[in-house]
Image (tube, rainbow, N blue to C red; front, side, top):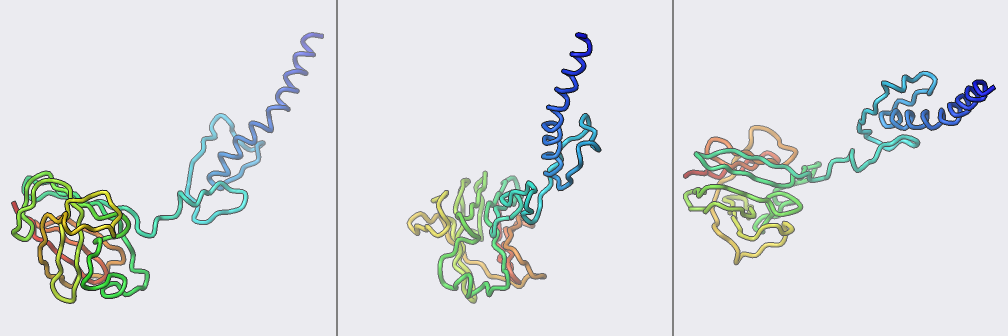
Length: 212
């Protein structure tokens, strides 16, 4: 009698727990957009695999915050000039069909040389930018675009929102000449190569020579 009662208890417990096990397994499968009936699942081998949905679907786990890239996502680029390690941290805006130079980026005004927070230029060794000495350290990089020569500004104040600019904190200013890019660049980007730091956006590149 005790054996029969134990078997009945075990069966009742299994019936009670089966929806819980099924729900857990279904949640994991819902996360990957693949609901599977519990009677078809191998619970010992089912492991959740997380994918990112492009759109929120009713009844599915698809948090938009994990899926949508910021309009101007954070980017970094780095490289070496001689023994100097150079790193640039910036936010990368996109054209999105807009007029960039003289429109989205006005001429003859200080611009953050990116988006969001101020663009950061960092070097671990003293270098020369367009022949002007720049001590090792971290700087905010600003620009004054014009239809001709540009002014690139290395400013000692860092960590601020990109539109917060204090001219009194300027370390150096240099003049550079923009050139036409070989291709259309939908997003702003920087490169460190061939003893230059180059900003690319739209059909333009803005090179700055770097030396020791």
